[in-house]
Image 1: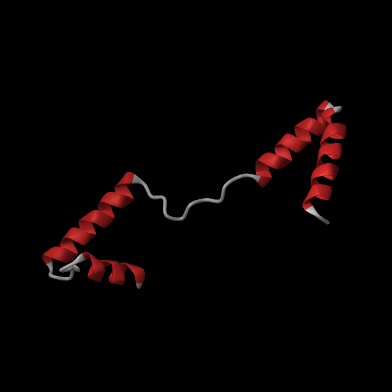
Image 2: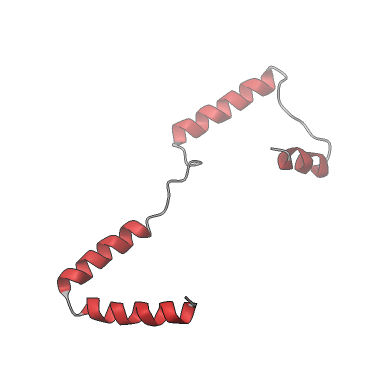
Length: 81
């Protein structure tokens, strides 16, 4: 089906649903679940972040850190990750 057909069908069905409070509640509940954003695996607590920073500082103290002489070298390394 083409987008215009989907749009027309959706608007028609939405009009039918809008006539019923029960159907409207069910639609809102369903759309809320459907549109729920996925969990971001990169999010961390403040404590987790500070622990990572602390570990990075210890690696630098042990001489295990990365250093770069110019930004191109750093970007090349970052792009390789």
